[in-house]
Amino acid sequence: MSASVRRIAARRIRRSVSGGTVTTTVDGSVVGVWDLGEWALRTAYTTVLPAMLGMITEGGSVRTVWLSKGHLWSCGLPLGVTEVSSASRSTRMRSLSRDPTWREFERTKTGRLAGEAPVRASRYVPQWVRISVTLRDGGRCVYCGESDTRRLELDHRLAYSKGGASDDPGNICLGCVKCNRSKSDSDWGWG
Image (tube, helix red, strand yellow):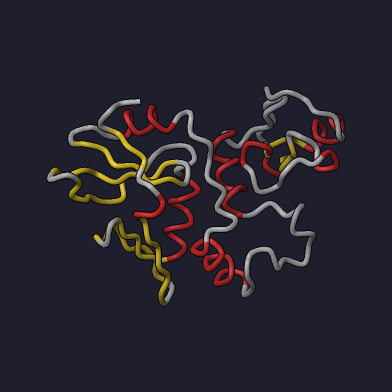
């Protein structure tokens, strides 16, 4: 990891939601303000590629703030997306299912809090996971490469019946109906 790219500790970050707007601050300095929908899309997209959010002053120098895999990173100038991608490569995706901002987005969009869906909450795949998996897998079945969206569905890498999580993008992939049915509850590798 580059010495100039550092993950920002969660205790330094505050996110507030008011009137459909998300404000992110680091050590009390505003990094960015977005509407809930834009924030949700930006967060999901950064599971694939980091996005610059703003700038902060840290230790007397100006640093850019990046969002990658649900974590905030500070980066010395003129470093950017390549360095943040490299630094966050081994970082596990932060689960957003308990993030109050994401829960507010789900409530605004659906009229109820995330987890109150009429399906079993443990089997329900949250929208942020759906978006990040679709972007990561390039809209294709990971087993055979099928790209017809009418035939694609979300598949548990470790079968749900064997305890596979539905809110972890690392356990969900795109699979076509044929491959998913063939796989059933066995644990195939990825294509």
